[in-house]
Length: 230
Length: 241
Image 1 (tube, rainbow over the protein chains, first blue to last red):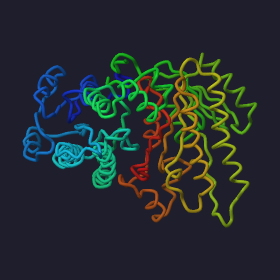
Image 2: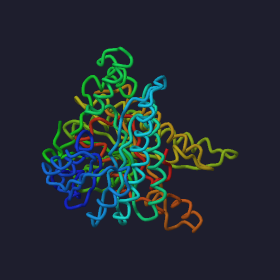
Image 3: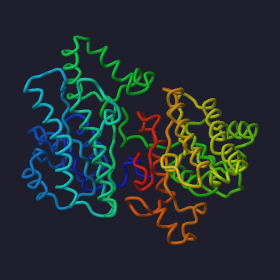
Image 4: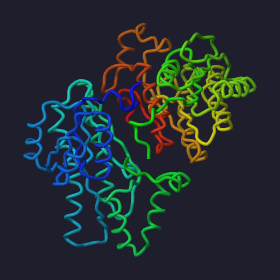
């Protein structure tokens, strides 16, 4: 049994992780890098190049809602064994906020999390062959809901819908499609959401966080160890 | 925070697997032993094994299970994980429901699982894992097999309840296989229509016991610490619950 255990067998496998400049995506990329994968990292910010360099990976700057960006990246990748659709956007979109900015936030969250997941999969699925894997980052909020997060919750429910649909479309080609639903993980995005919730509700962040983890999981566990990306 | 490259996920874990004589249970015992775990396999049938320690025990006999679990923990030098794989599939249509067969399935699939979990919870140290083998049929149901499906639905409910009740000391999860190439299924002996029914999933084939064992190994791993009350389907995408 080689070191790395369950992650054994990934040495030399070509893996693309989207949204991997920080947060959960960066954690996923680190695990693949540690397992010796031939790693491609994609994000829309310049930070992706520094993050990729640190992990000995190839960095690709692209917006997953832009087909031209995705096609340019696809031309640089000959073959993939694993595609991790992790890129996503989490913003508050309260029902009682009539501003144009709120509408724009709603549209952008849906565009990135739903349309972007579709476009990235459409662009990269041809690189996968029999035995290939697609893994979508969904969310605990793919199963439950949270006030103020209509766009995000709906988009993550949609990611489950895409996962099931892609599984049926690509299954006959021997490609497995699954999703992972993380609970509350400490990332820049989730801390930003927590701040936004505190501003909107006038309640302390600690109280809100306690409430979120209490309803999504087992209180006795989350008190002891709160999820962090590896 | 554990660095996966530094600690082996199963080395030295003390594990009891039920239904270890054949099929999925056997694949789990083999997989975990190969990864460096110390494994005791329970089955009602006598069995041979070189990589792990076989014990013949009837899961419907409470006193025998208590004694066998004490002996297993003593033999292993502790207990970290149990895999509840033993199960019976005796089918009958509702209008000719075979209650005697149903009682047998309840005794093994449900009561046997509860007994094993109770004893494991008593014997676990600071941490423990319970992994139950459910079935895609617990989600889908199947005509003519309602009794079996009910016992597998019960496994899902037990898994969720124990995950809440035993947290944070013990993590409780399940794996729901689809049709798997075992002597019990006898895929080669089926007619074409039956084979088509069993392979009606996106991957268009039945599974191998080793593929179920891989999901069990994932849930048993030292590195899998933030998952409880879940069920992983290993069914080629048949259920997608």
